[in-house]
Image (cartoon, rainbow, N blue to C red):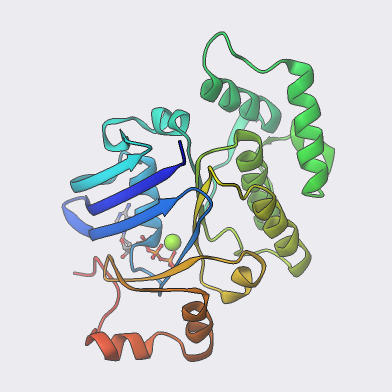
Length: 259
Ligand SMILES: Nc1ncnc2c1ncn2[C@@H]1O[C@H](COP(=O)(O)OP(=O)(O)OP(=O)(O)O)[C@@H](O)[C@H]1O
Ligand SMILES: [Mg+2]
Protein backbone atom coordinates (compact mmCIF):
# COMPACT_ATOMS: atom_id res chain seq x y z
CA UNK A 1 0.00 0.00 0.00
CA UNK A 2 1.32 3.40 -0.91
CA UNK A 3 2.12 5.61 2.07
CA UNK A 4 -0.44 8.22 2.97
CA UNK A 5 -0.15 10.74 5.77
CA UNK A 6 -3.18 12.87 6.49
CA UNK A 7 -3.55 15.69 8.97
CA UNK A 8 -7.04 17.09 9.28
CA UNK A 9 -8.15 20.12 11.28
CA UNK A 10 -5.34 19.70 13.80
CA UNK A 11 -5.54 22.05 16.77
CA UNK A 12 -3.07 21.99 19.63
CA UNK A 13 -2.39 24.03 22.75
CA UNK A 14 0.39 24.50 25.21
CA UNK A 15 -0.41 25.51 28.77
CA UNK A 16 -3.91 26.44 27.68
CA UNK A 17 -2.66 28.64 24.85
CA UNK A 18 -3.74 27.51 21.39
CA UNK A 19 -0.83 27.43 18.91
CA UNK A 20 -2.11 25.23 16.09
CA UNK A 21 -5.44 26.46 14.80
CA UNK A 22 -6.58 23.88 12.32
CA UNK A 23 -3.87 22.36 10.13
CA UNK A 24 -4.63 20.28 7.04
CA UNK A 25 -1.85 18.43 5.23
CA UNK A 26 -2.05 15.43 2.94
CA UNK A 27 1.21 13.73 1.97
CA UNK A 28 1.38 10.76 -0.37
CA UNK A 29 4.37 8.48 -0.68
CA UNK A 30 6.92 9.99 -3.05
CA UNK A 31 5.97 13.58 -2.28
CA UNK A 32 8.03 16.30 -0.66
CA UNK A 33 6.13 19.08 1.10
CA UNK A 34 7.95 22.13 2.38
CA UNK A 35 6.64 24.38 5.14
CA UNK A 36 7.92 27.91 5.30
CA UNK A 37 6.84 30.83 7.42
CA UNK A 38 8.08 33.62 9.65
CA UNK A 39 9.43 32.94 13.15
CA UNK A 40 6.93 32.03 15.82
CA UNK A 41 4.12 30.95 13.53
CA UNK A 42 3.81 27.37 14.83
CA UNK A 43 6.02 25.30 12.51
CA UNK A 44 8.03 23.50 15.19
CA UNK A 45 4.90 23.14 17.30
CA UNK A 46 3.31 21.30 14.39
CA UNK A 47 6.32 18.98 14.15
CA UNK A 48 6.27 18.28 17.89
CA UNK A 49 2.52 17.77 18.03
CA UNK A 50 2.68 15.30 15.14
CA UNK A 51 5.44 13.37 16.87
CA UNK A 52 3.42 13.32 20.10
CA UNK A 53 5.45 15.58 22.37
CA UNK A 54 3.60 15.35 25.69
CA UNK A 55 3.78 19.12 26.28
CA UNK A 56 1.37 19.81 23.46
CA UNK A 57 -2.27 19.00 23.96
CA UNK A 58 -4.09 18.12 20.79
CA UNK A 59 -7.60 19.43 21.20
CA UNK A 60 -9.08 18.65 17.82
CA UNK A 61 -8.36 16.97 14.52
CA UNK A 62 -7.01 13.79 13.03
CA UNK A 63 -3.58 12.44 12.13
CA UNK A 64 -3.54 9.25 10.10
CA UNK A 65 -0.56 7.30 8.81
CA UNK A 66 -1.68 4.57 6.44
CA UNK A 67 -5.04 4.53 8.13
CA UNK A 68 -3.64 4.26 11.66
CA UNK A 69 -4.64 6.97 14.11
CA UNK A 70 -1.37 8.43 15.40
CA UNK A 71 -3.07 10.62 17.98
CA UNK A 72 -3.86 7.55 20.06
CA UNK A 73 -0.20 6.53 20.14
CA UNK A 74 2.73 7.42 22.38
CA UNK A 75 5.89 8.89 20.82
CA UNK A 76 7.64 5.52 20.56
CA UNK A 77 4.60 3.92 18.96
CA UNK A 78 4.48 6.69 16.37
CA UNK A 79 8.13 6.05 15.60
CA UNK A 80 7.39 2.36 15.23
CA UNK A 81 4.53 3.20 12.91
CA UNK A 82 7.06 4.94 10.67
CA UNK A 83 7.07 8.60 11.68
CA UNK A 84 10.42 10.33 12.07
CA UNK A 85 11.23 13.84 13.30
CA UNK A 86 14.58 15.57 13.03
CA UNK A 87 14.21 18.30 15.62
CA UNK A 88 15.24 21.92 15.23
CA UNK A 89 17.25 21.56 18.44
CA UNK A 90 18.31 17.90 18.85
CA UNK A 91 18.85 16.81 22.47
CA UNK A 92 22.16 15.60 23.85
CA UNK A 93 22.13 12.30 25.72
CA UNK A 94 25.17 11.59 27.87
CA UNK A 95 26.03 7.94 28.47
CA UNK A 96 24.37 6.63 25.32
CA UNK A 97 26.57 6.32 22.27
CA UNK A 98 25.30 7.24 18.87
CA UNK A 99 25.65 3.63 17.68
CA UNK A 100 23.84 2.20 20.71
CA UNK A 101 21.05 4.70 20.31
CA UNK A 102 20.63 3.91 16.63
CA UNK A 103 20.67 0.18 17.15
CA UNK A 104 18.00 0.33 19.87
CA UNK A 105 15.90 2.64 17.74
CA UNK A 106 16.15 0.32 14.75
CA UNK A 107 15.34 -2.72 16.85
CA UNK A 108 12.40 -0.98 18.47
CA UNK A 109 11.07 -0.25 15.01
CA UNK A 110 11.67 -3.81 13.76
CA UNK A 111 10.11 -5.43 16.82
CA UNK A 112 11.00 -8.36 19.05
CA UNK A 113 12.34 -11.43 17.32
CA UNK A 114 13.27 -9.41 14.24
CA UNK A 115 16.31 -7.53 15.55
CA UNK A 116 19.03 -6.48 13.13
CA UNK A 117 22.24 -8.51 13.38
CA UNK A 118 25.24 -6.68 14.76
CA UNK A 119 27.26 -7.27 11.60
CA UNK A 120 24.52 -5.98 9.35
CA UNK A 121 23.98 -2.98 11.60
CA UNK A 122 27.65 -2.05 11.59
CA UNK A 123 27.89 -2.47 7.84
CA UNK A 124 24.90 -0.22 7.28
CA UNK A 125 26.07 2.34 9.78
CA UNK A 126 29.51 2.54 8.20
CA UNK A 127 28.07 2.87 4.72
CA UNK A 128 25.62 5.64 5.67
CA UNK A 129 28.23 7.54 7.67
CA UNK A 130 30.54 7.39 4.70
CA UNK A 131 27.77 8.68 2.45
CA UNK A 132 27.28 11.61 4.83
CA UNK A 133 31.04 12.14 5.08
CA UNK A 134 30.97 11.68 8.84
CA UNK A 135 34.06 10.72 10.78
CA UNK A 136 33.61 7.09 12.01
CA UNK A 137 34.42 8.21 15.56
CA UNK A 138 30.96 9.81 15.75
CA UNK A 139 29.48 6.31 16.10
CA UNK A 140 31.09 5.96 19.49
CA UNK A 141 30.53 9.43 20.86
CA UNK A 142 27.64 10.12 23.20
CA UNK A 143 24.52 11.14 21.32
CA UNK A 144 24.93 14.74 20.18
CA UNK A 145 27.12 15.58 23.17
CA UNK A 146 29.50 18.32 22.16
CA UNK A 147 28.48 17.95 18.51
CA UNK A 148 28.67 21.20 16.58
CA UNK A 149 25.41 22.56 15.19
CA UNK A 150 26.15 21.17 11.74
CA UNK A 151 27.31 17.81 13.13
CA UNK A 152 24.00 17.44 14.97
CA UNK A 153 22.04 18.08 11.79
CA UNK A 154 24.09 15.58 9.84
CA UNK A 155 23.53 13.09 12.63
CA UNK A 156 19.76 13.58 12.40
CA UNK A 157 19.96 12.68 8.72
CA UNK A 158 22.04 9.62 9.62
CA UNK A 159 19.25 8.52 11.97
CA UNK A 160 16.68 9.05 9.25
CA UNK A 161 18.70 7.00 6.77
CA UNK A 162 19.20 4.16 9.23
CA UNK A 163 15.58 4.07 10.42
CA UNK A 164 14.00 4.18 6.97
CA UNK A 165 10.78 5.84 8.16
CA UNK A 166 7.65 6.25 6.07
CA UNK A 167 7.13 9.89 6.91
CA UNK A 168 10.09 12.15 7.53
CA UNK A 169 9.69 15.53 9.22
CA UNK A 170 12.79 17.73 9.09
CA UNK A 171 12.67 20.89 11.18
CA UNK A 172 15.26 23.40 9.92
CA UNK A 173 17.73 20.67 9.10
CA UNK A 174 19.59 23.25 7.00
CA UNK A 175 20.16 25.75 9.79
CA UNK A 176 23.80 26.09 10.69
CA UNK A 177 25.05 23.96 7.81
CA UNK A 178 27.94 25.16 5.70
CA UNK A 179 27.48 24.98 1.92
CA UNK A 180 29.20 21.62 1.51
CA UNK A 181 27.29 20.08 4.42
CA UNK A 182 24.05 21.40 2.96
CA UNK A 183 24.72 19.54 -0.26
CA UNK A 184 25.64 16.35 1.59
CA UNK A 185 22.51 16.50 3.75
CA UNK A 186 20.36 17.21 0.70
CA UNK A 187 21.84 14.29 -1.21
CA UNK A 188 21.19 12.08 1.84
CA UNK A 189 17.55 13.15 1.74
CA UNK A 190 17.31 12.68 -2.01
CA UNK A 191 18.79 9.20 -1.75
CA UNK A 192 15.87 8.32 0.54
CA UNK A 193 13.16 9.58 -1.80
CA UNK A 194 10.90 6.74 -2.74
CA UNK A 195 7.31 5.94 -3.62
CA UNK A 196 6.59 4.74 -0.12
CA UNK A 197 8.15 7.60 1.76
CA UNK A 198 6.89 11.14 2.20
CA UNK A 199 8.67 14.23 3.49
CA UNK A 200 7.63 17.35 5.39
CA UNK A 201 10.49 19.80 5.36
CA UNK A 202 10.38 22.93 7.49
CA UNK A 203 12.82 25.57 6.31
CA UNK A 204 13.37 29.31 6.16
CA UNK A 205 15.45 29.22 3.03
CA UNK A 206 14.72 28.58 -0.60
CA UNK A 207 18.36 27.50 -0.94
CA UNK A 208 17.65 24.08 0.59
CA UNK A 209 14.80 23.66 -1.88
CA UNK A 210 17.23 24.14 -4.75
CA UNK A 211 18.79 20.86 -3.67
CA UNK A 212 15.67 19.09 -2.42
CA UNK A 213 12.94 19.84 -4.96
CA UNK A 214 9.58 20.07 -3.20
CA UNK A 215 6.30 19.14 -4.86
CA UNK A 216 4.34 21.50 -2.62
CA UNK A 217 5.22 24.56 -0.58
CA UNK A 218 3.01 25.68 2.31
CA UNK A 219 3.21 28.94 4.21
CA UNK A 220 2.35 29.00 7.87
CA UNK A 221 1.12 32.06 9.76
CA UNK A 222 -0.88 32.39 12.97
CA UNK A 223 -0.88 28.62 13.49
CA UNK A 224 -2.48 27.87 10.13
CA UNK A 225 -1.41 27.08 6.60
CA UNK A 226 -2.42 30.28 4.87
CA UNK A 227 -1.09 29.59 1.40
CA UNK A 228 0.05 26.60 -0.64
CA UNK A 229 1.68 26.31 -4.03
CA UNK A 230 4.55 24.72 -5.91
CA UNK A 231 8.29 25.44 -5.81
CA UNK A 232 7.65 28.86 -7.39
CA UNK A 233 6.02 29.98 -4.13
CA UNK A 234 9.31 29.45 -2.27
CA UNK A 235 11.13 31.42 -4.96
CA UNK A 236 8.73 34.31 -4.62
CA UNK A 237 9.14 34.30 -0.82
CA UNK A 238 12.92 34.37 -1.21
CA UNK A 239 12.66 37.37 -3.50
CA UNK A 240 9.86 39.31 -1.84
CA UNK A 241 9.52 38.10 1.77
CA UNK A 242 6.17 37.59 3.44
CA UNK A 243 4.59 41.06 3.34
CA UNK A 244 2.64 40.42 0.15
CA UNK A 245 0.92 37.41 1.70
CA UNK A 246 0.09 39.36 4.82
CA UNK A 247 -1.36 42.15 2.71
CA UNK A 248 -3.29 39.73 0.52
CA UNK A 249 -4.82 38.07 3.58
CA UNK A 250 -5.12 41.14 5.79
CA UNK A 251 -2.79 39.72 8.44
CA UNK A 252 -1.14 42.29 10.70
CA UNK A 253 0.67 40.04 13.19
CA UNK A 254 1.63 36.69 11.67
CA UNK A 255 2.87 35.13 14.91
CA UNK A 256 0.80 32.91 17.14
CA UNK A 257 0.57 32.61 20.88
CA UNK A 258 1.40 36.20 21.81
CA UNK A 259 -0.64 37.52 24.71
N1 LIG B 1 6.70 24.90 25.23
C1 LIG B 1 6.22 26.13 24.96
N2 LIG B 1 5.93 26.99 25.96
C2 LIG B 1 5.45 28.23 25.69
N3 LIG B 1 5.24 28.71 24.44
C3 LIG B 1 5.51 27.88 23.43
C4 LIG B 1 6.01 26.56 23.63
N4 LIG B 1 6.18 25.99 22.42
C5 LIG B 1 5.82 26.93 21.52
N5 LIG B 1 5.42 28.05 22.12
C6 LIG B 1 5.04 29.30 21.46
O1 LIG B 1 4.34 28.98 20.28
C7 LIG B 1 4.70 29.89 19.25
C8 LIG B 1 5.14 29.11 18.01
O2 LIG B 1 6.38 28.50 18.28
P1 LIG B 1 7.11 27.55 17.22
O3 LIG B 1 8.36 27.05 17.86
O4 LIG B 1 6.14 26.52 16.76
O5 LIG B 1 7.42 28.57 16.05
P2 LIG B 1 8.21 28.34 14.67
O6 LIG B 1 7.27 28.66 13.60
O7 LIG B 1 8.85 27.00 14.67
O8 LIG B 1 9.32 29.48 14.74
P3 LIG B 1 10.88 29.51 14.24
O9 LIG B 1 10.83 29.79 12.78
O10 LIG B 1 11.45 30.64 14.99
O11 LIG B 1 11.50 28.20 14.58
C9 LIG B 1 5.78 30.79 19.82
O12 LIG B 1 5.20 32.01 20.23
C10 LIG B 1 6.30 30.02 21.00
O13 LIG B 1 6.81 30.85 22.00
MG1 LIG C 1 10.79 26.34 14.71
